[in-house]
Image (cartoon, rainbow, N blue to C red; front, side, top):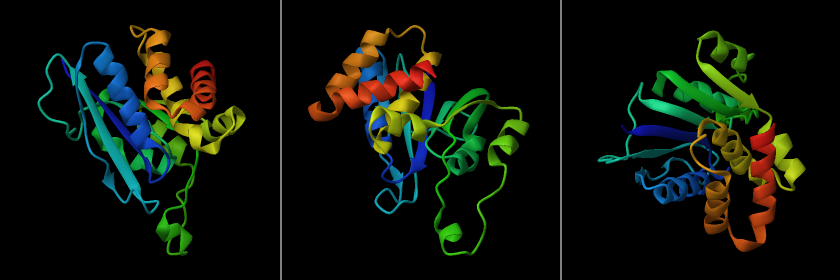
Length: 190
């Protein structure tokens, strides 16, 4: 059975590394894995989504509405934007961070209020964490991606911690490995 993970956020937050690391991890577990290209304005702070699909045999990298087992989100407005892609029993793992999109920055509209409460009110399973604070505690605001993956690891009880560590070692530039491992642990243990 194919499982689907959507990684959503804003350009420059590290979603490419997160999807690469997940792809590496799941391939090492013996799954057929398809990782999509980044869709969106990844270089300009716009909305970005990548898909990671894995299973015995995966034929397409695309996830349709209502098919995502997990939505891993770097930003709360992006969680709301992609909510319709979540399966009825799917799980959201999200940072509580708010990044103002262009319409908010130019004053054309306000950032939606109480968005996390509104998402929870739809009845979906939400695991929300202040990933930016934890990333900064690890040593860099750019480590939100590893905090999120640490949190996501809770839902993969059949994958040993050593496998996650090996994926970090393989996918992260050597000078950032320790910082990223610390961010992963903070997400995992929060």
